[in-house]
Image (cartoon, rainbow, N blue to C red; front, side, top):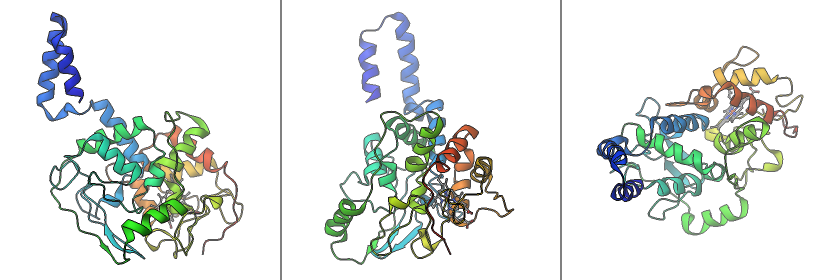
Amino acid sequence: MRGGNLFGVVGVCSMAMGTLAIAVLLNAAGPALAASPAEIARGKYIFGATGGCGCHTEPKGAANAGGRKYGGPFGTVYSTNITPDTKTGIGAWTDEQIITAIRLGRRPNGERILPVHPFTSFNGIAEEDLRALVSFLRSVPPVNRPNTPKKITVPMFESVFLPAWLMAFAATETPPPAAPVAGVARGEYLVRAVGHCGECHTPRSALTMAVDNSRFLAGNSKKTGPEGQATANITPDKTTGLGDWTEEQIVTYLGTGNKPDGDVADGLMGETIQGTLAGYKDLTKADLQAIARYIRSIPAVKNKIE
Ligand code: HEC
């Protein structure tokens, strides 16, 4: 598409523009057609801010090649190959199709992506950030690994149950016209949309497994936590939440995994901090401070996580 516009320009260009057009054509012959290094770097930063999409990488497996197993009451799904491989990954998808999958949970063939992929949170990612993210996804080495078919045990799960569940229970973030650049608004954007902290830290109903945003970030026991892991109450509640943590301690934890008590982040939190090709640890100090400031500003919820 972008190529098409440039060719349009070539038709009417002056001599000086002609030189530029040749440079563009030479560039177009190479694989770097999609984006500038700066755009790819910006995309890598967003990738890190999501926690590094570690769900799409098997432990010790090739980055983004998928295959990690996720069990649920509905059956078993395997994360998919999001490398730019044209046969088994997303290499043949358009930017629009990749963005639709990320934020709306739909594959180009119309198939639904289960909300194990946090698309209701990712829907809140600003367009410019999604575009940069797509540029980055296209820049990593393609890996040929066919997706593992899911095994759904609930009848009519995708045609009836899932759409009804999404309509009745799924709280969907709304994308801002532009990504906030600083302050608490920036922190809120990084927490609610890009970093999707609530997917793991907001209590889920044991009955429906829907997140309860009236107790935003108040933690989950092993029963409702992601992959059977308990997640901390990270609201500012004095006794059951992060009440005692200073802003600086939250920044250090997200940037290094080190807790104020000398312990280290474990399990999925360790994974999102480390990330795969980038993680929370790669966020700038200013962004980590914005996150810390935001989570210290949300309502305190008393909820003891065993
Ligand atoms: C994929 C799931 C997941 C996501 C996403 C996630 N966390 Fe966590 N988080 C966990 C788990 C699991 C733990 C418990 C780790 C442990 O036991 O060491 C945890 C622990 C923490 C703790 C330590 C609390 C304590 O009392 O020890 C903080 C702070 C925290 N998370 C903040 C965040 C923030 C902020 C975000 C978003 C930027 C976030 N988490 C996103 C799963 C997640």
